[in-house]
Image 1 (cartoon, rainbow, N blue to C red):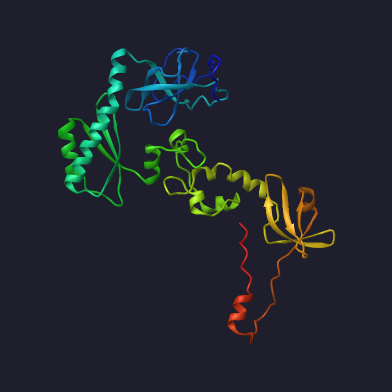
Image 2: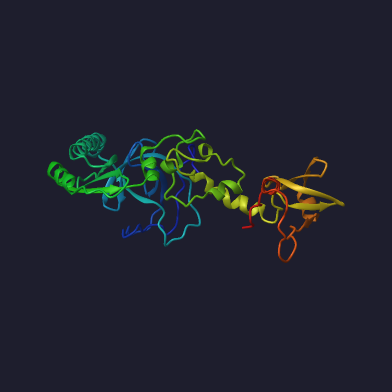
Length: 328
């Protein structure tokens, strides 16, 4: 939760060792969120500084060294956190005036590197598409993110880039989901993309998740900007799956108070089942009613060899019922 009015509360826990970093003496921690780049994903971190506010520029302990970042908010106290798993990055200190000026120029340096690399790609005729350039604050390394349909031989490109920037160069091929995550945008809900704002990893998404949540199976409705299934289909899938457990499936027949009904649709959020009587009248069954109803087993048909029908094949095909979906 984010609190914009009260002071951030200190966390008195043993979360004071961050992945190979020994802080020594114990001290209260304050949790903040920040971005390394203006269009980047928000990251959570902790610090001993109590008075950081939105817009402050700080130095954060990253895997490859210290990187500048901009504070975007703060968090309340984090309770019941496993002491063996440090929570977020370590905010080392406030950025100095010199570091702030260097940080201000960093996006322009990355943009210049992007243009140069794009020009060399066109000159060499390489089948790849540049997405983003990331330059380490200390200048020790530059990462070029790109997409391609297959493997690309970019050895000549790397030679040119190394000669130009005089530093380590890494070419990193990414997929369409990561490309969308880096570019950013707005989802169909009108909010910033989940992958850009807070997702740390991409979970597997299937069309079954949309079916379980009774969503329209229209690709335009359930696909994101990356033309893949929406990541948010995973958020409520387990809840719908649990709520539908035990409910009669659509197409099944139930008997209630001496009458037979065919289940038409499920309303799991209300715990109700809609069913149609032989007269075509729809009735909503409450959870108590459909649990009390007797399910009518499916007809298994006659046993033994099936006799050939003398009717025309067109009549047989036209009279077939669509097979119902198998149970999970």
